[in-house]
Image (cartoon, rainbow over all chains, first blue to last red):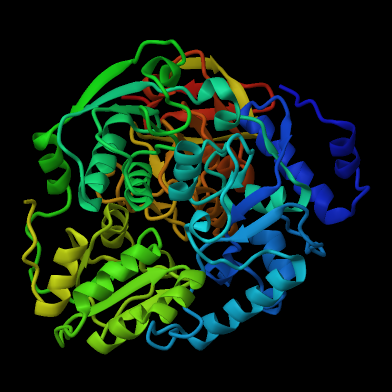
Length: 430
Length: 140
């Protein structure tokens, strides 16, 4: 299949705007052909990883190129063997998670080398105009797409959120496609960019009164296991859920399966009715989520673990201000067990708000930390000697055993904070 | 004489390669699923856990998991642990970008299910310039 390119796309490909943009266009064309896309679409909203500071990534570069960000970005973000002079980005572009908290990197036990790489990456971002939000949740801190907006976002929990809750249009992109999109403002018109690919496939009758964040996480995790990369349509929910619950729901479904879009009837914008959500087609399958399914999902995680918790990880995806407020309330006047650490992760901009409200101080008085820019699983940062972790996030509980080898408990935010205070896991599925 | 089977499909990344097949009915994760220095599958519940796809013709349903898939497969190319070619069933952004940056011949949309026709150990020629897969069954 050949792709049809516009005159301006042809011109960029031919080098009219320089070598780096020509390479970016060529990469997008090869990627589009691989997908079977017929054309590209304009985008002015890109979120991607500038991956050159994550642990181990620069090891594939020759020693003399490791601190040359043009070389690092050319290879790791554009798959170019030749070092390209990277020009300013064309599309509005936001950076995802970094390797460390810029203030608490010593607590995170980040090496001096990684700190230098992060600084080097940050200087590069300033030069080319990539916003350093350094969060997996750009939609919490100023990048809220408009309904129908074509985006090129990478982080799966963020893509499922903007597709489903906002009605923006993005596939789960990668480090290279987002970098190329940033440079030329284009992305293949494929998958969730195309309206007819956004209709539901599976009907889900929710019979359990799903309420707290853990329930929403378990619902997402169960559905991801059941529908894989398909599009579930949920009925039977009461009321409009808080954004944090949908954040956890989507992150879970995108971790256990590959869910990039869902519909909540009467709640999300492309699902005013069942008929609208399915585009007039019949569901391929009908599933239910009751008390039994909820228990099944919980038992994916919580079987036969050591109850002595070393590390409580909160804020996956990055916590909202309300989540930080909740934890500050639970820790007010308390002290963590001397055997347990509690790290909570939030975007930089929200920590500034938390500082002003006194939440950060409350956490610190209890012996906990409010951290930014980073993530335990992705940045590989954790307290020394951790063997057993606890978290309120299905996504983090999915990744911690695989990435860092921790036995991991999953529970409510309250159960996790309680474990940090007592040092022991006592949570259950009430 | 060994039996030879020919399949036809859609080229994803052009090129020609041949080698021994490694077949799995499980999808493969990049981040948290493979060791990109050795090509060994590390995912806990995966049927190929402990086996390496280095220099093999990797035959699998497709990609799953984190958006870092392409980055991890690009690293296998840079460390010399990449498969020689990819044959898969389900197209996603992860595998399309992953195949492009791994720079190995790749084919999908075959006229028969490659997971049924090809077994680990078969000798497979992938002609992704023309969309042809030629399989020589291993002797039993």
